[in-house]
Each structure stands twice: as C-alpha cells, then as structure tokens.
Image (cartoon, helix red, strand yellow):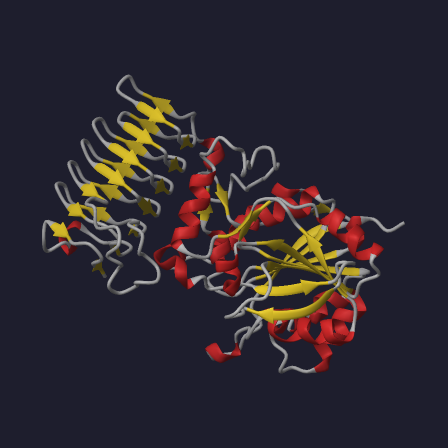
Length: 422
C-alpha cells in the first residue's frame, strides 16, 4: 500500500499578484501577511504537512526574498529529516522578463530535473496563494481508486463567479468530460481550485509533448480530458483565492465570524514565527484601562489604549488613547496616534497614523480609485508600508498612499475619494 508521503509536492509560489497593489510591491503574493500572524502560503504548507506529505519543491519567481526567508529550512512545518524536506526552486530566467515562467505548466516544465531527482508515483501540484483547509491524502486515495491519469480539485461556486476559473462538466462517475477555461457563457458552476494530482510518468510525457503548452488549464487539461482519464475530486470546505484587495479583506473578515468557516487554529495552520521581527519574542498584547475591543484579532506585542472593532491587528501594533480602528487590517508595528480614526483600511507594516488623522471616511464607497479602478472600488483605502500620515490629515474612500510616503508628501489636508498619493 502506497503512503501519502510517497507523493512529491510542487507548490507554485511565483505569481506577481498585481491586483493586491501595494501589498506586493516588495513581496510575492504568497508572502503577504494574513490573519495577524500568518502568511498566505502557510495554509498550503500546513495542508501539505497535515496530509502526511513530506517532500516539497516551492517554485519562486517574483520578489522571492521575504518568501524564502519565511520558508527557511521548512522546520516550522516539520519538513526536516532524512526522508523529508522543502526545497526552494529559484527562478529559471535569463536577462529578459520574457524569460520568466510563461504559465503554470511552463513553470513545472522548467523544473523537471527536480521531479526526476525525486522518486514518486504521483505529483501533487498546488498554488501558494489560497486560503483553505484540505486533506491531500484523501485526494490521493481518490486518484488511485479511480486509476486516474490526472485528478483536479474542484468545487461548486456561484454561477456569476465561474468566469474566473477553469470549469468542468463531469459524468456520473466523476470523470471530467468537458472543460472550459474562464468561460464567458458558462454551462457549469463546477470550478477548478488549481490543485492537481498527476501520475508522475503521465505528467512528464504531457510536459514533453509541446513547449507551446504553457498552462495547465488552457493546454494540458483540455488535451488530457479529450484523450485520457481525468477526474474531478469534489471539495466542500472553505476555499478562497485572495488575489484581489476585496477578496483579501473579506477573507480576513471571515476570521472574525462566529460560524467557524475559517479557523487556522482548528486547521492546525503553522507559521514561521522567527522569520520577521522575531514575533515569537514579543510580549503578550497589552490592554490598557481605556481600551475597548470588540470582535477583533489582536496579536502579541500590541498595545491597545483606544478602540478596536471588527479588525485584525498583526504583532506590535500600537493604538493610542482615543483612536478608533474599525473594519480594518493593520500589519505589524503600525502606530495609530491619539484620537485618530481608521475605517475600512488595509495598512502595510510600520505605518504611522498621526494624531487626529482620519483615514477612510465618507459615504462615497462607489467612487473607484482613479488610477486602479479594478483594485479599489468598494471603499477600502490602502496605506503602503512605512508611510507617515500627518496629524489632522483626512483621507477618504478608495484611496492609495504610496509606500514610504513622508508627511511632506501630502500637499493638501485632504485626499479625496479615489485619489492616490503616488
């Protein structure tokens, strides 16, 4: 009987994630902080660990340094030992941007040497930028029971969202008989999660067929469905692609709901607490006599003197007396000054919000950001890392403040709805 650890995992973590705007200015999308103490990639890595899989290759490309530092030796996910390990597979690029990975299949093809160097009956291919909890051991058992060449993790999504995914039609046995990649006029609401199990030799032969087949959803899967045995593995739990500002904010807010739809603790999600600013060494959060906290996640090292409502605070955030934070996400070591107000804001690390400043105000949630209308359009304001917001400054809805902005960069006392300080 084959064990789950006999499979080899390839984790795709090189995407730009440009729709996350300033949050990916200095880091890869899978390295973006999530839920106070985690990184997005922690969910995939922990799922691998909890499924009994022990050998992982992480394919990096775009601004990989913080991601590589975070993964380190893999010790945080128990990937150290004679028969276990995580290997960072750096970009296989030349001097031009055109030499970068052209698609998911192209990325795997350029790392065939890693597959050949690791004996495995099956290859599990994952994305490093999703928030979910999944048992890959069960998926491998399904794959083997069906004698499948390829198994695709799939779930039902609202019909109006299916255009964002690969969509499959299955027969009564679960075999995929039709496939459309991001259909404009969908015939099904069964969506691909970007999670695949391939028989090793089948994957190698598929990648060898043509170098022009650069994407799994666009090229590899349609051919396989037409010619061989491809099955849909049904998934019914929580899964979210946090590739947009809106989806990222919503997933963080899901952490605060009482329905338990997302629970990193129950899911046994691990992180590397030593990777950045020694989060493990921080003291417990401190709540002063003037503090008021409601339905929020407060990480270690925070000092709360003001009011925090329905928000997620990473380690080391300081909220001064009289300050109010609502429906917001603050990364590590932000400082919110006395009597400042933060509403519907995502702030990167090390920002300073001056006294009496108001960030996220007004009723014009529908005035999209002028420079990035597809990134910010629901009222969320985005503050870049190490930005300094002047005292008494007023910043409205769907605004962007660039990373490392100084107080002198603000030439007016108000940043109107949809405007950017860039």
